[in-house]
Amino acid sequence: MKSLFKRSIFFILAVTAVSCVENSKPNYQYMPNMYETVSYEPYGAYEVFVNEQEAKLPAEGTVSRGWKPYEYENSPQGYAAAKAELKNPLPYTEDNLAEGKALYTIYCAVCHGDKGDGKGILVQREKILGIPSYSDVGRAITEGSVYHVMYYGLNAMGSYASQTSIEERWKIDHYVMNLKNQLEGGPERAFDSLPGNEPEANLMPPVNAEQQMEVKQTEPEGEPIDEN
Image: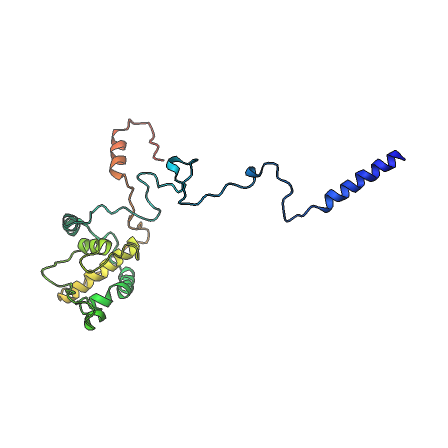
């Protein structure tokens, strides 16, 4: 009788335990912190973090994926250096020129005009004045100066670095220089002929390219360099 009573009690307890199980939810958690991490506000101050800051700053020298540091500073000296030294790395092809025209129509024509003569729709409506033509002798724009102004902006023109990618700005650059050539009555520039296996233009060289070159030159022969 006692054995039957014990079995009945065990059966009742087992049924009770099983009947309380819900597959959609976990059962008892003896160490909740092992299952659910503590949540912190990104900009909150907590003693468990260095400087009490949960959101950490990027490591020094960090470069965002898909972005290349621009070495010319936003100053008259930087503008002059870019104007004299910077060249368009993209090949001058029909496709790049066509894409440059489409981007120019979106971002530039409203002020600079479809022909680059400074007579965009905003100028015609007298919303903004004083837009010079690309053929203005006093400006004497170059591939480098055009890109520099798109990157930083100049006078009333703001920067387009956030709206356009590196490649898109260089395509616009090609089209702007093409408009300048047309306004000046110059001969049409021939498109570059590219072999099918030619590599794409290197728009994003290593940030420390010069330092890496120096290391390679001083590294003893037979010892591979770990560039990771």
